[in-house]
Length: 77
Length: 501
Image (cartoon, rainbow over all chains, first blue to last red; front, side, top):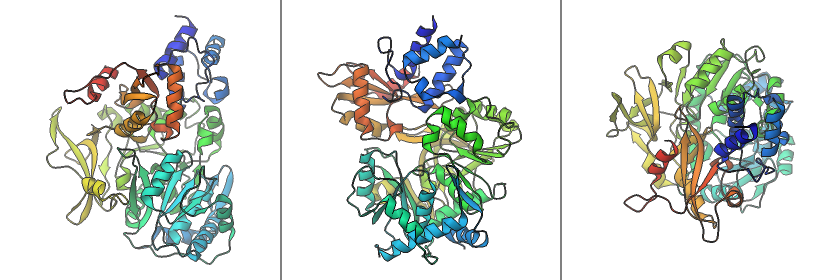
C-alpha cells in the first residue's frame, strides 16, 4: 500500500469516512478529528509508516486536511 | 474546625505576596486573591440574594474564575461552575434545574439567560472594589459547590458537594506527601470535578495553581510550547491527557525536573501508560485514584510502584481513604474469574447529600447507612481481602471517554431527536486495555437523507448546538436498519460485540 492509501485508511479507521474524493476536507473544523484522535493519528502514522512524529511542531493548520497529512507523510520519507 | 476559606485567607494575611495562581503567565498572589474574592462577596451581600441560593458561574480557566468561586462561598452561596465550552442548551437546562439566584460570567455569555446576570466587566469591577473581609460561616452541611454531570434523558444532574464533603477530601489529599507550597497543574475545566483535585489542595497549602487552559491544549504545537514553561511539581490530569503529553519524547524527567508527583483520576489508568511514565520519570511518585463526582473527586488511591506494575496486569484503583468504607451493594456480587465482583458502594463523609432538586434520582442512588451517607456508584469492582479495590467496568451504559463521563442513553436521546436521523444508537469501542477509545453512532438516516460525509457534517453541526463536544460520537456508521432485541429495542449489546469483535 502506498503512503496515500495508508493515510486514507488510517483516517477511515478514525472517522469512519472515506476521504478519497474529499482530500481537502477540514478535519478539525468539521469536528471529524479531536485532540485525542490526533494522538491516535500520530501513533498510527508512526506504527504503519515509521514516521517520526514531530509533535512539538504539530501545528493544526499544517495537518487539517487529508491532502496535507498525505503530503506530510510523503515529505517525511 | 477551620473552614477552607479561613485556611486560604490566613495564608493571604500572613503571606500576601505568595503566588496563588499562574494565569497565562500573570502571577496573582494570595493577597490579590483575597482582595478580589472579598470584593465579590461584598457586592453579592449588598444584593441581599435569597440565603444559600446557588449562583451559576460561567467561566473559562482563569484567576477570575477562582476569585469568583471563593467570593460566592464567602457570601454564603454555593457556586455552580459551567465551562465556557458548554453548548447553550446545557446552560439553559442547568439554569432551569438549579434556579440560581444570580449568574456571574467571567467571560461574555453566549446568550441571555432569564436569571439576573453580572457580566464580565461588572464582575471585574466587583473584584476591584475595596471591601472589608467577608466570610459568612458555612454550616458543615451547606453546599460549597454544585457540579453538573450528564443524565440519561438529557437532563443533567447537579451533584451537591457540602463544605464537610470537601473538607474530607482536602484533608485526605493533604495526607499525601505533597511538596511544600505545591505547584499543581490546573488543566481540567472547572465544570469537571477533577479540577477540584488541583484547586483546594493547592490553595489550602499556600501553593500556586499552574493554569493550562484549553486554548493551549487544543493544538499540540502550542501545548508543547507552553508546557515546558509551567513550573509544575504536582501533576493532576486524566490518563488520556498525559497520553497526549507522552507523545513528545521530551516529556521526561530531564526536561521536567520539577515534576515530583502524578495523580490520575477520571478514567482507568492503563498499565501501558503507567509503565511509560515510570520509565520517563523514575524518581517521581505516581498515584492512581478513583472516585465519582458524587463522592467528591476521589475516594481511593494507590501509589503505582514497579512492584504494583509487576503484580497486576490491570491496575488496582487503590485503598479507600481512612474515613470511608467501600463495600459491594448486597445482592450484586457475582463470581467472575474466581473473584466476587459486584457494584461498589461508597460510604463516608465525602458522599454528597444528592442531586439538586432531583429527589427521585437522589433516592435511587443515595442511602443513609448507619448515619453515614452511601452512594451506589454503578461501577463494578472486586475488593481483595486486604482492602485493595479493582475496577471491573460499569453496571449500566455509562462510559468514560478521555476522562469524561458519558451516559450512552443521553447520547442516544440527542441523536434520536436530530431531524436528519430516523433512528440511532451510540456504541463504545474499547481498546485492548478495556479503555473506551471511540464512541461510534449507528444511524438510520431520516427519509430523504443519505448516509455519507455530507450527512455526518450536517448531524455534527446539529449536535454541536445541543450537546457537550465530548459527547458527540467520533464516527457515524449508516445502516438501513438496526438489529433489534426480542422486546423490539435496539440490540445495543449485539452492536457493542460487533464493534469490539
